[in-house]
Amino acid sequence: MTGTLTAGRIAGGLGMLVLGALTGAAGWLVVDLWFPGGLLLALLALFGLFLGGRIALGTGLGVGGGVIGWFLAYVMLGVPRPEGDFLLSSSGIGMYAYLLGGTVVAVMCATVSLPADRPVSASRPVK
Image: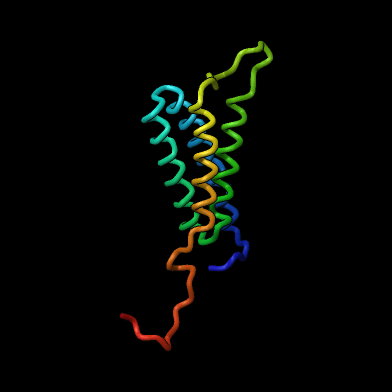
């Protein structure tokens, strides 16, 4: 499964973009409501989304759609409105931990080496 672009992979990437935006918005709400446990729950949801995209699309680019959607949701919810207030509260260390933790999870999932990524050698017996 190398990186050839097909209609299925493009549709999968766009689907991951939408899922990333939904997961990012839900994670923002959960982190803001229940700080210590909510942060862990949001990061676990991001891990599942990014790793699922990696496995489903077969390349590290499968993580990219989810990351872009998550980051766009994060930025759009954190921008102040014209009235001067925020749509959701962005105070405290939780939002920074969510941003840093999500970035670390995304890099981990994009660079992980899966068994399906390695070539199978017929010259070596299986143990």
